[in-house]
Image (cartoon, rainbow, N blue to C red; front, top):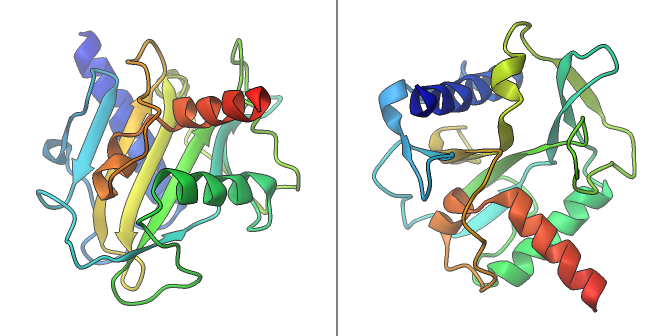
Length: 212
């Protein structure tokens, strides 16, 4: 049953992000179960609206990071960080170094893909990443009750969409647990954004900065 439970966790987390971000009302948005497939390991699931991202997309627009965490009452929340939050500045720097061939756009436009990233916050992990925002979150959205057992397994969620019409391009969900070690070499393009383990990538960056 474990593979089905893992897929269920990915579907629940994906659905909640779509609901909170109010993407389900946009034409062309949706992720039926058959659109998900296993990624590089059994705790990663990829969703693609087409076989591969269109080559016409030439730049990336970063949406402010979302954090998945619990409040003191145990209620799961998605909190949207402010654009000037240190986490967002850190992500921009990380992507410039990791994917130097992929320009970052300042605003939506033709041939620009929007990246939405959710990271597991510091709610009860044994060794949480240093993801505490340096500025208050600008939006807190309670998630549906009764799905905590699924959200507990989530490490990160990423969605790529057309920045103009919100059409889904692709995305992925990573679950917590043992995973292959991250390759520290630079990425090559769009597919790296989907198969990347964002928690590992950020942890690797922290270790590198500490070492330097």
